[in-house]
Amino acid sequence: MNNITELVFILDRSGSMHGLEADTIGGFNSMIDKQRRQEGTVLVSTVLFSDSSSVLHDRVPLDKIRPLTDEDYFTGGCTALLDAVGGAIRHISTVHRYARPEDVPAHTMFIITTDGMENASRAYNQSQVKELIESRKKDGWEFLFLGANIDAVATAGSFGIPAERAVRYCADRVGTQVNFCAMSKAISSVRCGSSVDDDWAEEARAYYESTCADS
Image: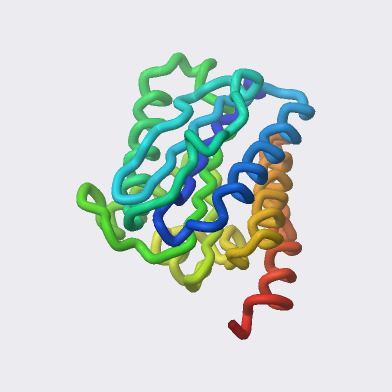
């Protein structure tokens, strides 16, 4: 088995993310820098979504990822989350299907981040995305769901993502930072050949409970 990790980020840039652009850019870049220091090959895909999806990285080697900037990440529009997730799963599935067996990554991980409810998808509905996720989970793919301003556990569950792989985070500067730290911790576990630790998002959960739970 190879030591390749397929890492797919589905990152919200809808209008409700306004004001968190700099923190999101900084958090993403810091996470990428941390992952560069770990051994192993990583192919990074990044899908930014609002009303529609924009593919920033399509299976780019980790060491070739340039820093995210405000020219890449800017906010506006609605939340076509299902289209972003469904389209990315189908794309990666197709790549794996036609790859030589020895070239299919040993680990595949999707990290979905949003701060609002789905309200704009046209190509995929909830049941279609759930079917895709449940099918890929049988192949060992990992899915994480990080949501702000929504019931992240319930929303993840509606997509077929279990509660222990979901976290509700606080949509402020610190909350965004700890969110990316949680992602990095989970990624490191998967890259080492382990499952995601149950406490992968403990810091994000604790910050949410202490700061945003009553707001």
